[in-house]
Length: 366
Ligand code: SAM
Ligand code: DTB
Ligand code: SF4
Image 1 (cartoon, helix red, strand yellow):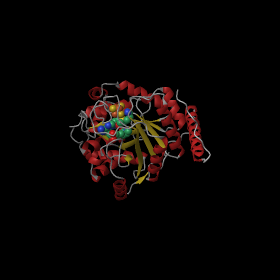
Image 2 (tube, helix red, strand yellow):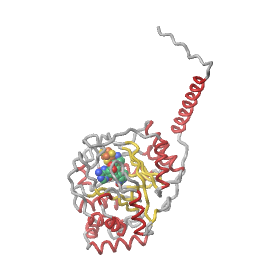
Image 3 (tube, helix red, strand yellow):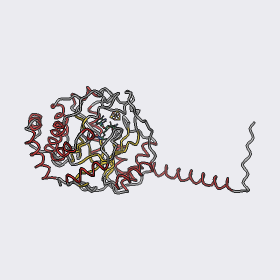
Image 4 (tube, rainbow, N blue to C red):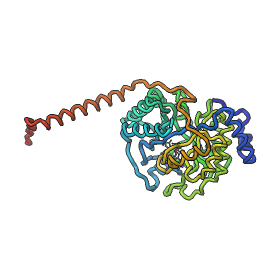
């Protein structure tokens, strides 16, 4: 994954960001065509496998337990339910599923075993599997890789300087370490940010510069427009201007010519024309389905119509990298064997109850 050698200083990148908009878009559209089929869009479906109650204080996030948002909090979803949603996503044209959990960090417990099983199952369906579970250590990253995880999403969100104004419960360097753990385990990296939180153009470029200075930039860079949710500290932020979204996408496209640039949260506030400008400026992916993690996203039919108008089509999976192998996982295998044994015992008990000669065991209470 290469970076554009012309924009490796903050000054050069900022000058690019501030270029006349029409020139910037034309430049980005040209770079886009050199490295990508401009008619193909990678469609990724988000599944919130564990929602709300997060101990972190990210100022933009409706899932933080610190804020009073009107949210349907739910514990870890069962594996079969998530697999069912992934099947629907595949039938609707998505090539990638991204499973999100409102965790500060991954813990080595039964919920993580379930995530590993979900990864195995969805990779087995021939889809790219991505997860966004918070901080991750090396061993956890390796376990996910063995299960068949294709990508890990962990956003820097903004510049190092602005980060402190929106999150106090963890450090910018914690984020960088997690990204390195995913990368070192051989997992492709998805990392980007949010605009519209009150940050400056320098902050937007500051975030991109952090990616420039990584040994390898992210394979996928999501650009989210803030969804200002009532009850969060950023509830009163004004909606992001289309022009800012186009600038940020175009600049990312030119600086990271080979990466996937994803037009992410905020599409419900954008017209079809505004979204078309983002595709023109080099966006090559969207989140599909009528829900992001907890907030709305355009309906399936609206996206189908937009793709028809623009002559665009969904991209097939594994065009940019090989499908990972799924290897057995001891803890998942044990959990599955326990489940089968429990189901067998329950079925036997049910049969016994149906037997007319069955006499329930007498229990004496002393
Ligand atoms: N807890 C994990 C984490 O923070 O990495 C994973 C889930 S978290 C919701 C994933 C990303 O969603 C955040 O890094 C942020 O970029 C994005 N996000 C959250 N709330 C948002 C909002 N209101 N508007 C736009 N993006 C948002
Ligand atoms: C990303 O950059 N954006 C997605 C995904 N990665 C996990 C999440 C957007 C969340 C928007 C707010 C919500 O729906 O809760
Ligand atoms: Fe928690 Fe992630 Fe939301 Fe931050 S962005 S509060 S870590 S779910």
